[in-house]
Image (cartoon, rainbow, N blue to C red; front, side):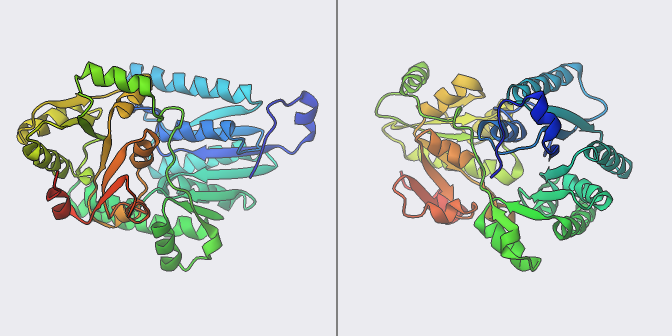
Length: 384
């Protein structure tokens, strides 16, 4: 594990080996229910002393046309990270990739390589297929660059199963991503995946040396997701939740692969059985209007629908008792590592989840705080 000193004198900087850590993020630093995975990753580099590189270069997808308000929000986050880096004796730069066109891919690889050439040691951490392919082009220009491919999921299958495009376009993108994935894996010096199931699959499929692939499960921000008794009482009082009532909640988006119909059907099933009003239900999502539509569709009563950040988010998680994790039953879910599960556990919530969800479906079996359901049918027949 690398370490760095929080104070670097000008003498040390001039004599020590210059190194750059190039972090190619998964997306722009767009707003979310809480801080993005990218920002949390970079902050962890500093907090846990994970790098000894003198400089960090962060890339992100930054569309040419972006609302002024959104532009200010993104640049503000970049400024905050820049100040944080400077406090740790590190210089941080940002490079905006305009799009995923062939022209921008080539231009990005040339620009980043031009920056990296000035350093003795170069390490690229690429978080998805597109970024890693740019990393491959950079490595072709300079073989001494270490390329790490951080695979967060089966992107080709995600495109095939969940994209809203027509089937022909989805198949074309599926094949392109498959080819790109093979190129990335062949040229990467090291690879990380989010689950043991995923590692076993990729090692066997691509005939890799097991040591080349490491398992790094999803991580959560322990400074955000922790149990607070005072906040629990505050928010349970706000929503008039009695001491004897259990608050069951779901946190996240309501996309197709997150099975919103299954989620709301499950809530409705429990509510029908709840003759003594021992249960309350809450949905935490940015898309509150969509949640209300599902609430009306399934005729669910007294459903708390909120979005939150900061202390409010901590309070709502602390106010709850049981978190729900549902996903489509396919390879994408089987190899996944949803961040919501450690967030639920970090705030002392019990769990209801499907067996198909990553390693959690295996590791949490027989745990007193987790109820593992075999499939959709098993979930919908849950007895109160």
